[in-house]
Image 1 (cartoon, helix red, strand yellow):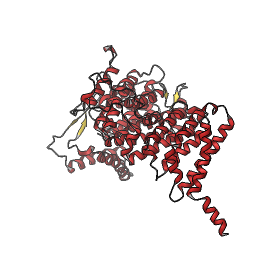
Image 2 (image 1 turned 90 degrees about the vertical axis):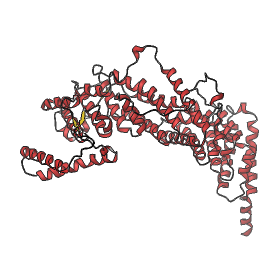
Image 3 (image 1 turned 30 degrees about the vertical axis):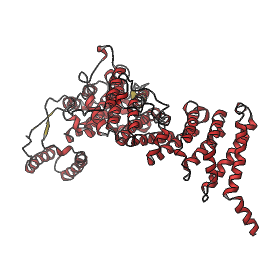
Image 4 (image 1 turned 135 degrees about the vertical axis):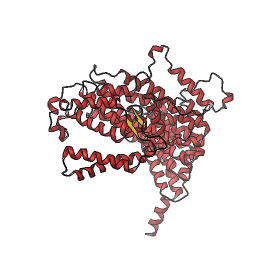
Length: 570
């Protein structure tokens, strides 16, 4: 019995494990000496696969065993991963690729050998990743691509913990002082060879599932790493990374349907609509429906990318990089794509106004980063800039100059600005439209703006003025008198039955929006605002009330919501 235990212990000893490891590796060396036969010789691929399986099994076993880890030491000294990665990528055999991914995963997870800090390991792994997923991902399947992207994320996660190893994976070819760079230096060039890991991630940030999650989080970690490397900061500003991010968002917006119907599915109508003549009022439409799975998927993908933009701005600690990203967002997405779609929308082509109004509602519901929100609303609402721009670095100035050169139009007639036709004009035109769907979409957008972005709507969508000077204070007695007058009006209209309960319910309803305004700092204003009598938005709302009994039910639902918000938010 004791002899059997001794034999088992000897077979599991580090020395015995290393011997088995070497025996499994030797066939790989021999077979890889004849690379021309790998793609066509099935027995050779089978033997490679078997040997690689054994190597991975021994490494996994060693990871659970106490030191010394001789197999890991041998792997590092012999650079086995380079041989295996080259064989797997040239063979184009999915089995070998999977086993190689597992090998890199085991090595990255090892603790006693710092593979992630090895330039040879980094070069070998990136060459393998580029060959597998850069252009040939369709040949191996989405699961292999996801596994490789997860490994890329694992590398970035280690860089986040060990900032000193960034130079192993990133090496800028332009690490020079600004004074050493030529005056005609061009910013915005593709520099994949400098940081291939970053490019592999950014190409996949729009994906769903594991691939997109790992790519987006990994890229966020890269932006966090800017605080530890001025070379990385300058490289991001001068690379085409901001351009790729902005154009990627624009591409996803362009995938959204140009014409959209917001009619409810007859089989899943809200009760209030099902009990009305809503079904009879519907018109047959060939445009894409807002409730269709296709639209829901495209919209979710676009909004997730917009959320990623805001996450990047939140995690990035470099003001120069933030400025560069916002510049590209404004020029490449706002000015060249979103605003032209707003300007060109119309009810005459089957519902493009409905589509644009709906997309804007979704965008404004998702915006929460203060810098991005300010830039988008100030531009679309044609609000003059009041904040003095802070001085920027020479690198940012060079990038801004390059951006303007690339996007300037030779024809002045092609340049349209929101000062001529703003988001307010689009909303007012939509509310006054003869198309009920356009009216609903416009009212929905105005409700979103009044709810989430009150600071920008009180002087644009609504025309208001202060009735108190900054020195004056509104008294509680005045509020009580106004409340008593309103309660008397309500009692005269509806009677005294349940008036107290109705008042309590109204107070409860108003508590939530007031708390939201307080949390957002909106109640810090000392003045009291009133809406001017000839406010175009309110006049348009009143016009709809004038035709209340002939409006469709969905129009009236949106109308009452918008009126409520215009009162409670002002």
